[in-house]
Image (cartoon, rainbow, N blue to C red; front, side, top):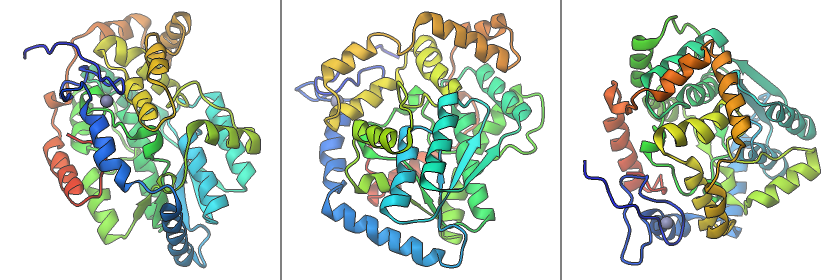
Length: 380
Ligand SMILES: [Zn+2]
């Protein structure tokens, strides 16, 4: 492969570390263009969005009559899901069950926030604790696979756990904190952003490197939840944060003032593993900075200046001393010696294409979704 000359967008901070990024004559990237042409015209956070939000609320309430809960929300303790819980209860007037998956990596702040949100809003919390031995075995398998997508075991546990619970308890509506405001610039696939839950990929990696059977680990395949759950069981996912004004600092302030909720230094810092993965493993082993996409989203939505983003990304979010301590913590928690984790870290990088996967099918599905206008974010 011919190495591209380095280029960074003149409007956001996405750059050629995304191998497929396209720039126009003015040096503006296709994420920026997609935001302007596809996302903005379809994003109604004003009156139109409000009407839609209340219309959805009515449907959910009506279907929930006589049930203990009318919908379910997965809560990580981070900003987006915490604010979604607030919106569901206080603005939409719903009776959500708060669902949390504990995959073993919660920071104390995340645990505190979950408690504060549930107590403050008077909502019931259900915590699904993942079998740690299975979680550990899967995570070590992924590390040994050398692919960039090291957060899939946690992500899969979070989403599959929630979908399984919702199905079992016949909860039809899922509300999520997914939103354009802080996530309109989607992380490219190459940066460890494998889309959706691909059981073929997990099973292949686990078959090659795993040591114990995954007896209880929740795994619901993308085809199962996109087709069977959606069209046969009638389960629907709503993203309320796209239907009202949602600004990061305002939302943080509201949650702090109302519930004593505590903000994180950066997106995804509620999990100790994700924090380590995104601030250490991914940039240093693979050269990918997820913050580049996070900050670009904030630039596009007018919540951060490009200069501030460039300054923030010029150094890690966390100090070297802290990151080295986290390296030891992660190794120790996964029952690896520092040397073992270091040798994996130094090993040759691979991509998910070196394992069995359904990416072609998932891409085709995503292409259809875009054609049908169901997904507006840029997705190659
Ligand atoms: Zn751009």
